[in-house]
Length: 509
Image 1 (cartoon, one colour):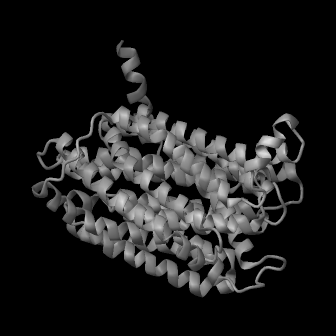
Image 2 (cartoon, one colour):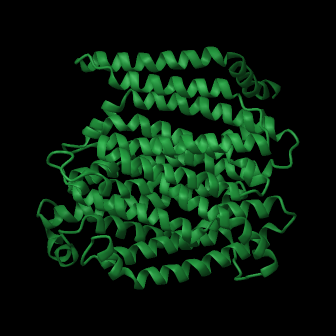
Image 3 (cartoon, helix red, strand yellow):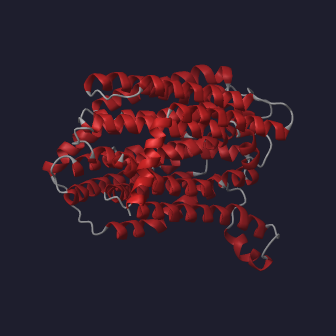
């Protein structure tokens, strides 16, 4: 129970920072939907799908590789850090420079004529992100979760601040609504036709300002490329690179493909790019589940590697999985039954609620992604990372096939089904292969039951509509409480044991 509490404590710190940070970042959704046209949101969706895809190339699996070689190989963690950071820095600068000089042709390829600066800024974002990747991993390995979380929050505050400055404040100053004395100066640099441009520029500035702080907190870094150390790290990392490429295709690239798969005129009064903007905006409503998965990954990855030599680790991993599913299913139902309220709060323009029915599918998809992160530990600690590519490549194929076949038929729902179908495939594939190579005694029947019931309760609460807002709210949350009561009944012995383990130390004092 002590190790579970340690993991829960680390996850809570990452989680609180992620929740606070994403909540702040989430406030950008009403800002974007209120101030930017749907076409700009479509552009935002495409560009950040591309950035997410290339981010995997820029770091090429070295974060997980760093954890593996710094914990379970008898090597000096500091030596591993110096070499990993040196290699990532070299690759990032070379790739970033190549992307920067190719900005003009890329702008034409992706249908952004005259917007080459967007791809130059994307190159800068990718390079700086890569330069911070291994230092952030080092903070996680050292258990400096508070430092990690604080720096991430500073970065988010800066990003949000620049977004508000450029998109809202500067707009109102130029319009003469506020601070008229600043109008002549702001008018000199403000570009009224920039929308997604200011989103990327804000990201560049926030990352640039945070980089020196990250390097200072981590400590001195000496450029060093030692072939005897980097060769085995490279072989370990390469399958993870391809896993990451396939995984990001599953996770975000589908948003970029959506507008190309959707027939023009499928939704009245929406172009395909505008529909892509609606799709991307509704994707953000599933961010609550996404940030919990992210927080768990931040804490779980170094934790799993540190426990790799523990003879009881299969039982420990099974318990972690079980409680992860319990927590996330409760969260999923709670969010899904209140989507009407959440949507009305964050969509500040008409035409976005049309895609709300896809959000429960996305919530379940992200939950399954978290299940996959739990399951994937078997090939990471046994150094069989080639399976990561097989599994995620299969998921990527499922994603593309579903998008190309179901989006033209079902629109937004088809796009969400690609996420759900992808991660469900990956979970099944990883579970079956993992139990053959590294058996873990998961509570499979109970966990699958909770997942299926959470899905049914989520859609049951979402679709229930009496026409009375107050009555709907009460009934929706009554459904949520029924699900919570069921979980409590099924897990009462474990919950009592957990409560006793928390209270007991206090009595001992």
